[in-house]
Image (cartoon, rainbow, N blue to C red; front, side):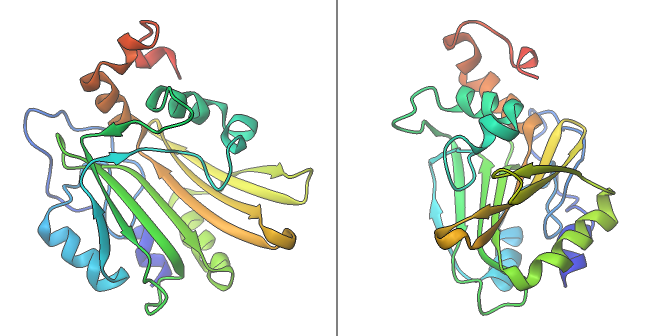
Length: 219
């Protein structure tokens, strides 16, 4: 089951013809950068993860657990997050739908929480976030390593914790052990479909409103 979460073939259904496809990168439950999140795909997610709360006009925040994590360890993602959300007080809403799965404990996927955001123009994923259970982490990490190779490992919290990352065709996969209450470890995972987010920023005109820099200058 753990292997299938990240190693299944991406769905062949493509986005609308007017929206260019992007290079394939990382997959989650058969969903890749060019997979359309249609009714069939949502039914498949529901069967594995339970019912989802649906927000049809979503904000897109890349931070994991606390503000400042990205700035400290993933400055490129911090810059992208700032492009997506100029106002630090209120996250900008986009023509994108967020599916939030909170009742995942009944399944055997190893997650306590899954969030998937997909764009309306392409129908394809922009961001996937997960909170994993401690007992599932070794198998989850192994399944990702088997598919994408060894990660870069970054010590965090003064060496008391760590974060792993993979890069492929511009997209980023992050797994982070973050310290919670009482320094108990919590496990966060995130797939950032950077190429799709660049398309979204281009369509929204955010790059022009924020100083005239193109998205290619961010990375």
